[in-house]
Length: 474
Image (cartoon, rainbow, N blue to C red):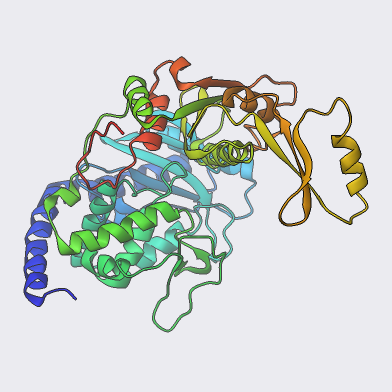
């Protein structure tokens, strides 16, 4: 049990820390006034452009953190939503949305998520112009952004200046842990999820006090309402208040939620401003990684796959699937797998696997049927043939089944992976054709790259993000 005096001291220190951090991360009144003016001007310009081109635009609005002032002082993108009639064909939706964005934004660049949107600039701000449908029921969206106006109305009606300040603190805390952002690359907390949990628990410390007692999977229910019944493999279940059958936290990984659960208790017991300052650190180089492998007496193989032309939210789930499939196959192939990681470079995907030894045993155990089954005869005939590569057996095991020990053909990890990769399911756009020659190399043969450093850091420099970085040789 926490000593009351130490608990009061920690709470007092947290008050001081959070007040100081709030001053640092909150936008100035002048910035807030400027953002409010730009929001109005941006929507007015879009409406004028829609009138000029006789566009079927139903509504334009700025939503998200720019609309609710929940953005951090050094991190603001303006999200502009262009909503069209629900019966507008999807190709026309894309055409009209992009055309209106180009009419108003400077330096426009087409980007892709579930459908195309435009990134550009307006009055000095980065703006994402996203087309969607003006639906009347948020539980029946036609595109992924159609719930946004309902989210805006729900939160704007409930958030106070005090809650907005707590949202910013919570975002900065999660940002320091590296778990802020719901994109597939991060698998963390979306801004909307942050605002909902702060609204639910009242403050950063309210969220962390609840979180320190969570056990994954976590089901957060509104008072008097059950959370939705969704797949148990998710990390956190929190119903969208505008669509109770949608889980707002579906993108959050178990790893990232577990990091928050651990950090919650640590911060509440020992608050400091360090919890709100993301650490800048260099990634592990190939040379450093090779030194660590020498000390660990282990081996890393790197699978190199061509990078498909996909947006990150489509690519990264496939990359993680490929990592799991490759690591599991290495384990099934009788190598002792210690860990794996993945990373993406500009033109390639990397999957790294660390094993205890680069060569598997020369002996392979071939399990046979229990004595008494009809297929025993076939098994014995096969393994007693003069040309059978038998080192020992056939013999009866302690459980009454037959076994034989044979000599392996290929023993090196890289060669084994080259042979099996074309038959592995690595993801729709990453699976190799059967005739392909897989690129698999020991780490020592890989050139330096940003992606390789990220993969090596994830594989060989794992550590809780709030601890001082240690340089261990083994």
